[in-house]
Amino acid sequence: MPRLGDAREARSRLPARPKEAPFLGVGVGLRPVHYGDVRQRAAEGRLEVDWLEAVSENYMIPGGRPLRILSELREDLPLVLHGVSMNLGSVDPLDGDYLDGLAALAARFEPAWMSDHLCWTGVGGNNLHDLLPLPYTEEAVVHLASRIARVQERLGRRIAVENVSSYVSFAASAMTEWEFLCAVAERADCGILLDVNNVFVSAHNHGFDPETYLAAMDPSRVFQIHLAGHSEDGPLLVDTHDHPVRDEVWALYAGLLARTGPVSTLIEWDGNIPGFDRLCQEAARARAILDDLPRSPEERDERAGRDPATPLAPAHGA
Amino acid sequence: MSELAETQRRLWRLLTAPSGVRAALAEAGDPEGASLDGWLRSDAAVPAALRLEVYANAYFQRILGVMAEDSGALAAALGESAFHDLVTAYLCVHPPERPSLRHVGERLADFLDAHPAAEPFRQRWPFAADLARLEIALADAFDAPDAEALSREDLAALPSEHWQDLALSLQPAARLLGLSGPAVALRRRFETDEALEPEDEAPWRATVMVWRQREGVHFRELELEEAALLEAVRRGASFGTLCEELATRHGAEAVPARAAGWLATWVDAGLLTR
Image (tube, helix red, strand yellow):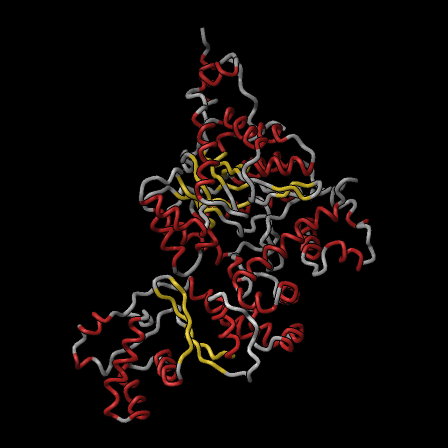
């Protein structure tokens, strides 16, 4: 006879996706070079992707073609706004004008959610326009969590923060990157935009196991997944978004989804950008993996050969 | 200063050093990067300085790429090496401050005009500041505020007694610029894929109108009369005031035809707003 406790346990294994992050399917990052193709395909009903992600800063402008095209596409498609300059980890004050601009953009385009990065991009009033690494310390956790909470308050919505690729790490770090990400998300009560390529790149550059990282993610916090390609620079991998997604990253993605269930997935391509067709091929590969997921926790357990009464791995493993 | 603040300021200094991370360390008497030990994790295969170079190179290359695209004719006229040096000098004086890379070169014309560090560029390419100014105006026009254009139908519907006081206004994207003629010619040749050698003839000045029509950004040189009239419009002159200006230039009998001609030109270009 099943005990009451078992039933509760089974329910808790279902992905408790926050209502801010519905499952959108597979999307691509909207880039100006594809405007014409995307509009034509959307008009002909053959877009082959479910949603779009736009870089917020590219649309925080007074007027012109980019805003008109985004408005047009938004009529037919869900949209996520993804920022690169919130500068969450900086010791500089949060930029109130920037947040006002972002809030206005959100009011106009009603994105499914908004995201930025778990990093800093500038200090002393300067912007390096790069996603710079943080030491994984208690000081940084407290700093980030408080700033994310203020941003969420200002925007009136929960945001998702993305793990970045990194090339240096700090001797002062007192925890792993995944412990840091989970701690910040938990304390700020925000979502996570999990970039599987960034996990792979950083794992290579710093010598950790990417599967350990992914296994530590709380599925209920993962709003979205990013997939992209990277390149090699001597002994380092660099997050250049100028190649197809590597097979190893696809394997990590499939493994992650097997644990989390379906998560909105986005293909990014920013350098040597190919035709939109090629992005659709990458999106189709993600969709095939999503479509192959078990439809229920029972089917998942059955496929894994797992006894349904056995709890899954804890959400915040180290 | 908190540890986090110190970390960020130290990284900022290293990553933005104009000659690169390893050269900056060498200049500080630390060619081996020993000062990084105990701060950054390192290993024999990939020393910390090499890891920092990934960020430093990305910082410069990203901005160089954006500025080369936004200032296409200037980059082509100076050539790869000189434009690289110009961006290096510019970034030392004006590191990016705004959230979007779109604005990273917004002070390039002023820098080329007046900053001592730009003197070698001014000497060799006297048109450079004006070419930068024109290309900044073109970029600004691209995403300037939208406005509904005044149409021929709007004018046809205007009662005759209202013409005298008709207030004319330029679209928000419009800019009137006084520029060096060679700079204007270079940009024109850049857009039409012609050779970019500057002209040898004596420098000349041109008044240029930059505007946006049907989402395309355009520029053209103005004759003196049109430049004067559009400058008056920019300052808020009514149609009646423009007619008075034309009467002074050509006599009262020439006014209706000339005024109608200019107005039609501007309306057809979408230059005026409702």
